[in-house]
Image 1 (cartoon, one colour):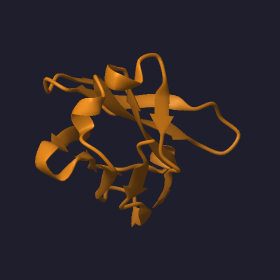
Image 2 (cartoon, helix red, strand yellow; image 1 turned 60 degrees about the vertical axis):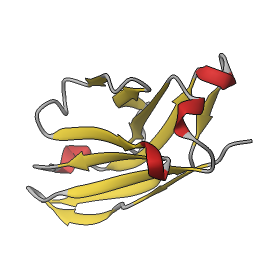
Image 3 (cartoon, rainbow, N blue to C red; image 1 turned 45 degrees about the horizontal axis):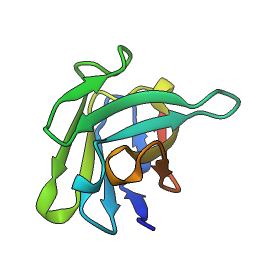
Length: 118
C-alpha cells in the first residue's frame, strides 16, 4: 500500500512562513486528488486545500491568499506553502490522497506539527 510522509512542520513566529511536503511512495497519479487537512487540539479535523491530478486547486476560505498547494509529479510530492501564518494556524497538518486506483479509499499520512507563536 502507498505511504504518505509529511515533513516541514515546526515552530515559527506569527507572520512567518513554512513549506510542508507530502512524499508518496508511488506515483501521485495513483490519486485523483491530494490534499491537506489540519487538526488543532480539541477541534475537528478541517479541510485546508486540495490539488487534482490535472492541477486544479481549491482552498478553505481561512487560508485563501496565504497558502499555496502545488505538486511535483517527478518527485511524487505535494507541497503546501504557508505564508503570513497566525497562531490560529497551529495544528497537526495531514496529507491525504483519494480516488484513482484507490477508489473510495482515502489514504492519510501521519501528520506534521505546525506551531505558530504570537
